[in-house]
Image (cartoon, rainbow, N blue to C red; front, side):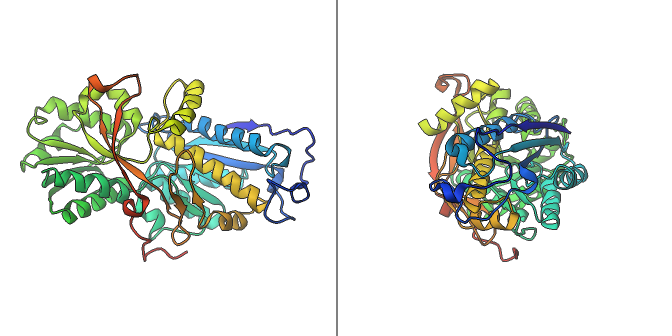
Length: 413
């Protein structure tokens, strides 16, 4: 496990003493709090070597560090969290490894919170540990609605997106544009299964039908057989529910198969890094639902410029989401005057947020789903691209009130 310690030495700091209440503005809402073990420890658990490395991976650590830096710059000597450390680990997209690493972070490394965790099966394992340890977990990278459904718990929050949001935006729009008959190809684990469930429901609500649901291994690099099978029923649309490196492999092979001229491709989940890796020509104007785009407005671009200066790449929505989640967690610690989990949860529940990542955002108290405006976007054509990462055209903003499902009755905190 890699460890990076962030020094938060403030000139007048005295370890363990909380003087904020006496200092006035910027201090905690109540005096008498404390920081466990004398520091706040943020765990970053994600895929740092596999198919999801580019969309989140090591660069999410950069995003979290940017949040720490901004928190310190805002509060200075009045910061409740003076020492802040990041610990990170690679879960290799395997739920058993994620489960073990989460236990190590909470118990051995004294992590107060774990962030990110793409791969839904891994995220569900970490949510179970968070509940057992009574420590926070904010998921950014996974899509399963189970995190805010039957597997919800007091200490788990879902920050960036879920499969319902992805499907309700793009699934209905694709049917309404003439794509009524679908074949869906999905990775056979929690994310792919939940994506297929959400997309099938969205397509059918819009008047379409799903003729086939075809499971593939995860991860996978050979889709030829599955593409042939999906095309056999002569659908209007083949919907691919893979993500990251698997999505890139699928699209390459879909275009090579020769069926792209007669069958439309619908992408369930895509990141800016996927488009950059493959090039806009491979997507033929594909539309999808995006949680955030770096060039949406000046606020996003300003943050993306800082990120690019450090990483040499533009941020994905997972990078931006990790920044937002880390900063809002630290703000909650500041407001509570402590990193005590129950006190921090109380600060987060019901919070309304408008920041670089969340527009019209709300941390729903009922299920801890963080709802916000999202976007229907289209991959630009080559002649529309003005700079290297200028790859998406925002077609419309989907308001938070329309993008997400209401709290599930399956969720009991």
